[in-house]
Image 1 (tube, rainbow, N blue to C red):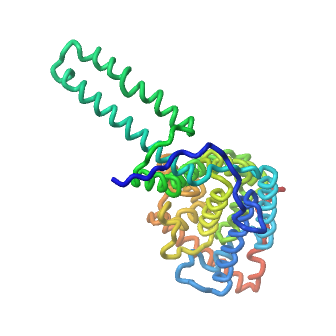
Image 2: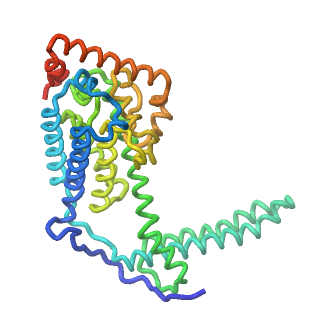
Image 3: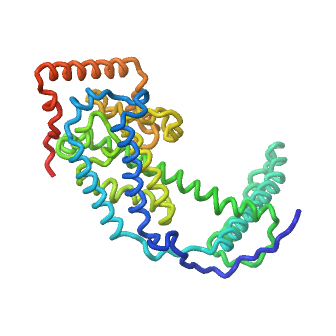
Length: 378
């Protein structure tokens, strides 16, 4: 095997240049999702106003006229208020003093950890080979021999070698194989960041599910706070952030960033994760079940799944934001393809068409959607 001598450099942390020359990295986690929100919303707004992709639209114009109780102007206003609150909290809590290991140092450290694990595994295998015969033959010496091997063998190595390697990275120079260095690079650039993103998704989805469900279960919270979001029964893209400030600040402004912090995401990673999260949130509210929707990877029928939650008869189901895991575990999942759900959808469309037809006959079509909300005060 080819050998590459790669000793651990002196342990040091250093800053790095900003990703954008005109904006410091610590502003990215709250600005990038905000920009993404309006860019994606504008695309779907154009699709909606120009009557494009009608074959994928979930609701009819009659439903839009008769069901929604919030005007689009109010939705834009409160979405901007929410984002202003998030940006202010993001600005006040931004980490502008990030320090990082040099990439070559981190790669070599991962290679050192791999070497440690190789040695640990070989120790366990060797001592297991010594002990197995005693266990098989049932000798009285089996248990004492096992204990002696564990104390003097891998246990001793685990306490000494692993601790020294993982806690004190300025270890003696070690020649690493090319394979070990390749795995070290894969761990640093791909596998560990992927693990961080998955952990962030699990934490954020868990937090969002239980807080979202609490806003429905608690009658006071629903009546005075969360019902504002449900003024929109026929979702549209920029209605995704139509929330009460008392919901926005603790959940989106504090809880969500805390999940990213617990997952160990840096500013750039948080900005990317926030952009992905925003993309899914906006798409889930867009009102179009488009083919090849990437959100379906983590939640099958993602748009349909959340659209059902926005219906008057579906508010006690489908609380999850990312995937459907917690809904399935907690028994709150309702497939939008279920026959009962489809029957309710069709009944809603028929009622909306009937109301529009009646209004046209009375020349009162303009009065169908007054833009009045449920009365939640801000």
